[in-house]
Length: 239
Image (tube, rainbow, N blue to C red; front, side, top):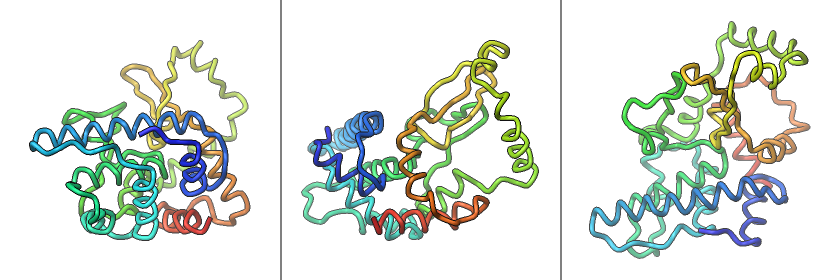
C-alpha cells in the first residue's frame, strides 16, 4: 500500500491530530503496510488460500477508530468488531495485520513484535511484550510503559538536572557508544550493553504533533498509562 496525498492528509488528522508532511512517518507507514500485507499473504499461501490486496487506508483508519472506541476491550473481541463482513475471503490474519498497522500508526509500537523475532529474543535485556488475546489495548500499552518505581523517577530527575553537560558527542568520543534509530517508541533510550548501542526513537515530527495536542493539558506527568491512554484516544477521536 502506497498512500496518496489525500490519504496522508486524512491520516494526519485522524492519527496524528494535525496536518503536516511527516515524510519519515509515511515512509515507515507505507513500508510497514507493504510488509504486513506480504506476511498476511504468506500465511494465506501456506493455507492454500487466494492472496488478497494490501489493506486500504480506509480499512486501517476504520480499525484505528474502533480501537479508540474499544481500547478497554480484549483483543479476542476485536476480530468481530474490526473484521468487515463484506470483504470476501477475509481471514483472522488479515484482520490481525490491519489491527497491527492501526496500532503502529497511532502509537508507534509493535503489538506483535515476537512474530518478527526468534524465540527468546532480547535487545539489551529488553524483551518486547506481546499483545495477548485476553488483554485490552490499555493493558498491552501499560505493559510496554509500566509506571516507574520511585527510585527510578529520582534517578531520572537527577539526570535531567545534569542535561546541559550530557552531549551525544561525549557518549561517542569518551564511551564509544553508537546510536541507532528505532521506529518503535518503546525502544527509545534502550541501551544494548553487549554491542554498546543506544537506540533513539527518531520520528521527531510525530512527537511534536502529539506534544502540540497536549500543550495546554493540565494532566500531571506522573499519571500511569492506564489513566492516560483512554484520554489519549478520546482526544484523537474528538479531533
